Figure 1 (tube, rainbow, N blue to C red):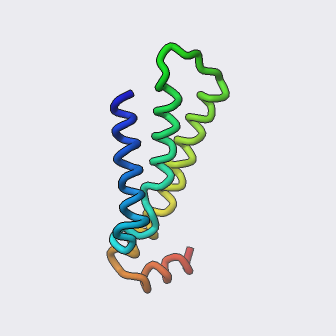
Figure 2 (figure 1 turned 45 degrees about the vertical axis):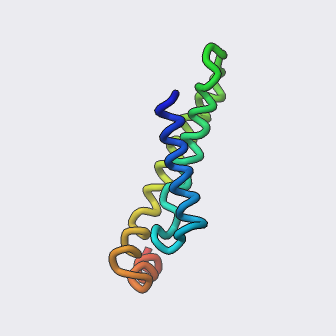
Figure 3 (figure 1 turned 135 degrees about the vertical axis):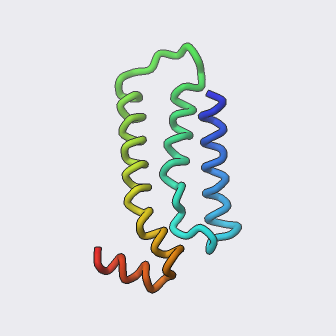
Length: 96
């Protein structure tokens, strides 16, 4: 549980850093879907000994699948922006 809490905290800190402190350094908030899922996973497991239902477990797997898909879809655009600039990212987005 401590590792999940640490990962959720680090991912949330990166999101806060991206959004408010240095918004131009890491554009498109690349860690945003992942920090929410890690937080849910922590609170899914946190009170030890509590029985968990099928719905909460299914939601956990759904959230992980959704966050990985949402993160993966944005990575080509993010890396095109970082390596080629805004014009290259706009051209890539227009093509796809």
